[in-house]
Amino acid sequence: MNQTPTIDPKHTALLVMDYQNAMVNQMANQELLAKMAPTIQFARDNGIHVGYVWVAFNEDDYQAIPETNKVFASIGDQKMLHHEAPESQIHAELEPQTGDIVVRKIRFGAFSTTDLDEQLKAKDIDTLILTGISTSGVVLSTTREAADRDYRIYVLKDLTADHNDEVHKTLTEHVLPMQAYVISTAELPELLQKA
Image 1 (cartoon, one colour):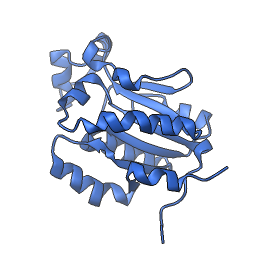
Image 2 (cartoon, helix red, strand yellow):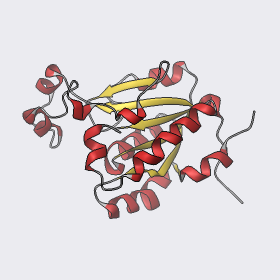
Image 3 (tube, one colour):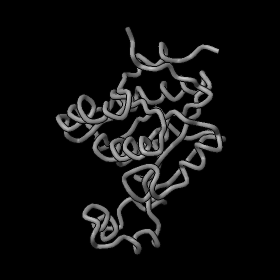
């Protein structure tokens, strides 16, 4: 018997996180991109909201990063992922449409430096389907904070990836299931509530 709860599309958002040129190009697994586009279309066709989360910085953002931040201090020093740079843009095959949620973040998680929570609540969304690059970065951080904010969370394990396959495996099999339902894209159709 399937213990995973069904998904009500009206109250659900698919979050496409950090599917940006730089991140997609760094991943050996190019199947991610090929599977992401049809998954976004599936969400749209079934009334699931679509949201995009991308990480990028302007000059003020760089200046505000303290030296105490182990990862982001070097990003600021090297002026990486500038918000106007081509490598920072959401991949062209996955471009947002009018009405989609879009937030730009300046840390790992999707919530802490954005108004994502407010936008989701305004649309009466209480369930999130997470995808992202990388599993140990945006996916883990967003899952943890979404759980603390009482969202029901699904992680699409075949649309998340990490530079380290073992880390991805450990997170999707042992860590994320504590707070999220870790499923594959193939399981999505059977979980949707029918109108």
